[in-house]
Image 1 (cartoon, rainbow, N blue to C red):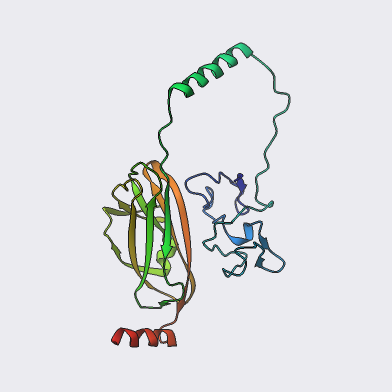
Image 2 (cartoon, rainbow, N blue to C red):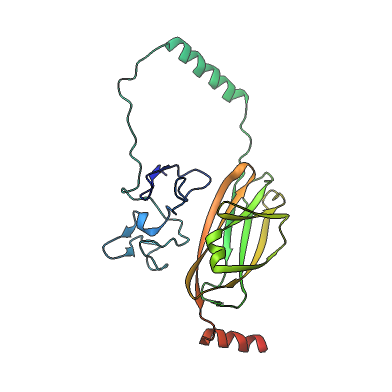
Length: 246
């Protein structure tokens, strides 16, 4: 993935940074459809052969899509250095040889690889009624990983009232635009299910954005769940009440 330039504030963003796709300058979500090479701005449709038709897309939509690729409009132009002088060739060669010897004698530590998947009924939410989202956190590596944090955006909690989290986090606190839920270390190849119960505050399509972070602020992925919330008193809500009575 290349570096990208935020269209709103002009900041250069590294797509491998822990906070990506949120802009380091203005926090704009750079993974929106309007910034993707697969989005046709003339017809407002996704042209990807696999994703097309799965999500409702608009210029500003940010569906949970793994095929997002920055379009040419936001890809940062790399400057080419010309006229590089050759100086101290002997010293440079010595440094390179020393580095190669270090690589041979020092094996890198095994990398931790985590993932997060979201399970929920996209169309099962009603204003004022409890709604459950399950985050499945999994360790794909052969080493334990500590400092696990499941983080929810502040904007999501403007649309959803947080009722309960199961299992309860070891700690919960707010940092910037994120509500952080901290958990114990995840063992090698271990999976953990975290159930988040919320109450939708308004009708329409609202987004629940969750990301996974481990120790030293290592970013492991983000899920953007578009939830269709029915108004209170709708037929969907009435059917849900009848089912609950049974």
